[in-house]
Amino acid sequence: MRENFRQLWDLVTPEALAEGSLKAVLTKTTHVPPPRKLSSRLPDYPGYKSRNPIATELQILGGLFFDDIVTSPVIEEQFLKDAYCQSGALSQYALVSKELLRTRYTTFFESQAGVSTSPATGKKGTNPQLTKDVLAASLSKRPILLVGDVGVGKTTFIRNLVKNDAKEEFSRSLVLFIDYGVKPAVSTDLKGYTSAEIIRQLRENENVDISERNFVRGVYHQRLMDFAKGIYADLKESAPDVFKLKEIEFLGDLLKNDEEHVRHSLEHIFRGQKRQVVIFLDNVDQRPPAFQEEVFLIATSMAATWPVTAFVSLRPETFALSRARGALAAYQPRVFTIEPPRIDMVIKKRLEFALTQLVNSGKLPGLDGITLASKNLENYLRMLIRAFDTQTEIIEFIDNMCAGNVRESLKYVGSFVGSGHVDSAKILNAIENRGTYLLPLHEFIRAVIYKDAEHYNPSDSPIPNIYDIGTSTSKEHFAMLLMLDYVERAGQVGGRHGFVERHLLLDFMQSAGFTVEQVLPHIRRAFDKGLLSSPEGLKDEGADRLRITSAGAYSRKKLCALFSYLDAVVVDTPIVDAKARSAIRCPFDRG
Image 1 (cartoon, rainbow, N blue to C red):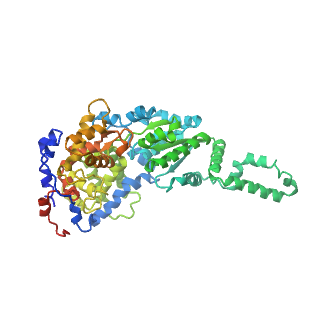
Image 2 (cartoon, helix red, strand yellow):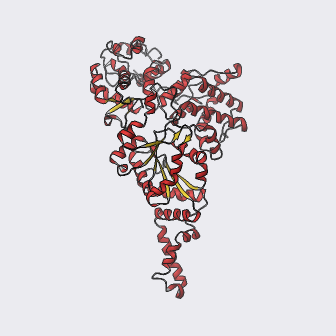
Image 3 (cartoon, rainbow, N blue to C red):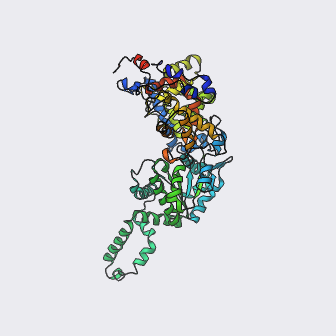
């Protein structure tokens, strides 16, 4: 099947690519009958790629040091000291201009939202104003927003802030983390979930049971004093048992409202222990916009009526929508932006941390289920560290395709470690015999593209098929590339921070022979796969302006010409030439 793409690829000449235009290619294509993908002829598509025993054990390793090792409470503080990467450093490998990277948030916040922002970090570390605002926010009665794109490391930033950068300030505070990443399932349960989480963390982390008798009586001491002077005061002397029951019933009624009881309990802790209460409402950005707005309203209520400093993590696009017509419209919030760190440094530091743990203890924390010799693990980790230290092609691929998303970049590396498409036994044998192994780009890309599948599956793969088409016009194979090329070139002029008006793109594509109906699906797909972005984070018809991302630039300039990529996506690419399609045979052909 590796020759199936030849007919299409022969049309893409180096001259056409070098000129930055594919119009020469488009003039050579013709309309043919409705397309049919080769995947429709494969039984059990996309299939499952089996692993050898070594790869299976390495897969456990991949999940461990890219996920579990970070959240292990035993080594969390050490991990943050050794492996945390400061956000805000500009990528050295991005295929878009540094000006676009610098203005990642500037255009929206200053021009669109009318809100002044401060970076959460600077050259010397965490912005000192952020630490000062831990106290000031509780005085100003408004929450602090930590705004950053999905996967830039907002949670890790918060953990490092508490455990390291502002450790002294937070050591005197009662710190609570409310994680909305998975629970609750619906926004109607938000208040109940938030109260329940605070109650649980007070009990488990602070050894404070807010339903315990003495604590409850301490919280409502003044209310009990007032009760004793009320209508049941006469019973205190004449019928003390009855009075005690009435008093217990009174306290029981106060405890029925969990939210109010939690608030009164925190006020009691604040006054009694003289401790500032700080609540982080985290992983909100992983939920739908309506959910995020509801969390913001909860944080606003907390900041206004509770003795707390409330931090909320949000996405820029949610902030944009809410600022325009939602919950944020009536507020002037305090906003700190969190920029992505350098992806190559994040991965390398995490690998080095895992290797250090393995060398010092002979195993990795939580790796009890793996039997692979620790020497082999060491060799594999050293091979990966060398790759991310010297193999600029691999770093460039991850850095651009993940576009600052740390979470996604770690998934890329996790996909490689233990992939069935990687001959891990060969790698370990080469290290054993020659002392080293130079990881090639094509091996890494194959693991990322296929993941666990036997064949490329666009619905599951993080890598888009830029040659896919929606009509029977053969030149449409190159519509995505032509569109990305125009957006990047047009965005470099006019001082618009790289943005191009949507109608100008449509006009250009129509001048190249495409209809609007052909182009719109490609725009939507480019947004969905992160190849294009808008200043407000909007997608599809809601975006009036578009800008190419580093993933879009890499796809156009590098990815489209890599054989390992073409070899993978050919199964998902319709062959519109009837003669060529009929010549393609499969051992298990279904027609």
